[in-house]
Length: 202
Image (cartoon, rainbow, N blue to C red; front, top):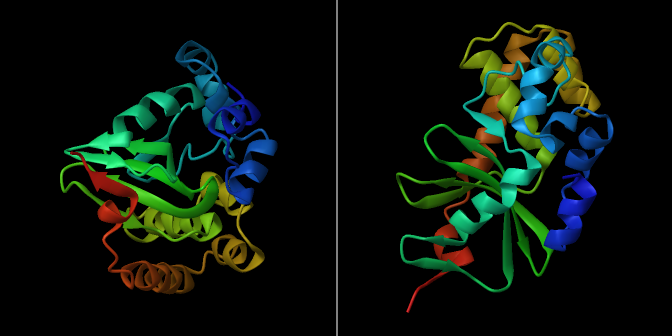
């Protein structure tokens, strides 16, 4: 499934940066079946810019064909049903069953969220996909202690000039500072997002 088909079926548009990365070809693997990925695995691993390959995070992007299945799962969770005005479009998941998703109200993009299955709650990463991606890469370098290698540098090309340069310059102090600043912004929200997006089933 291509991104345009997915957007049409959902009646939404993905965030601009997500679409720009897709247009580079870095997400081609996400449009393909598992058999194609297995066949081209070595090529994908060596490409460095293959979206989120080689970046040490705790999640992996969903194949576009997997999104609707994950969407069915997240539309009804533990006694809650998604409100009619909201659309939740998953784009990644963790091994533990947590789901990263884009949230829309009346088909307009409003937030990047993480549904944590064990806690049965939702946290917000804000509505800036560039900042979300920057934070993930900072986390890989600072917390996971990933070397700033070809994969990190290739993914830095998707970021704004300020964020890109700190990876290219291997400025660990600035990367750490940026990660903490973004975390502080995320932690400022104490809104109950589960009850914002969902209603209790009758």
